[in-house]
Amino acid sequence: MTPTDWRTVIKDPQEVRAFEALEDSRWDWRSTAAVARTSGLSEAQIAQLPAKYPTLVRRSLAEGRAGEYLYTLHSKYFAQQNPLQKAWTFLSSSSSTSSS
Image 1 (cartoon, one colour):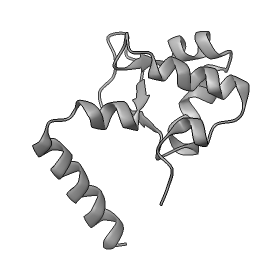
Image 2: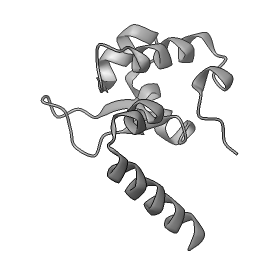
Image 3: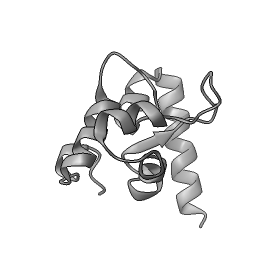
Image 4: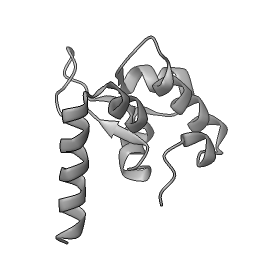
């Protein structure tokens, strides 16, 4: 099973700051620039987080007001879903991994 708590996975101090920025309860989603500013990582490094940590970071499907990508933790995203959305997410991810 893949860990979903970033604290058990992330050890690099700058990446820890990026994950703390994503976890900040004041925002549901954070822009690349905001996470970069808070963490000290570059915007390019922030943009790579979903690929580097696919079970931890989610990139929004829609762009923010300024046309930038937005990011959140998978755990925050999942916690905000209603029960029907959670079931759909589970079924969607289960069927996509089992058919490969």
